[in-house]
Image (cartoon, rainbow, N blue to C red; front, side, top):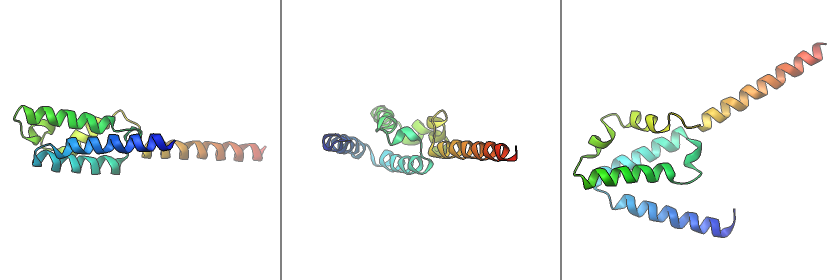
Length: 116
């Protein structure tokens, strides 16, 4: 990653956060909770850019423009809303489980080869 990429990434993130700050207060609160949740759960593509988070801001901007409350947009269970967003996404937990399964398979194969 070059310095230019880092600078462009920071500019994009600042622009993204400016959009969040322009949302009504209730939307900002829910957005921050969603962001915390997603960072905790760890969908891999979340760190590859702000595509998922930008999509949420787009949805929130549309909801706010339509005069809807944030829970009308997300539903009452915000965690379920988040889970639905990332249900087909690979998480860091998935990557870890896959690597552990591969390591176990290698170890088992090595043990079987040594038994011969």
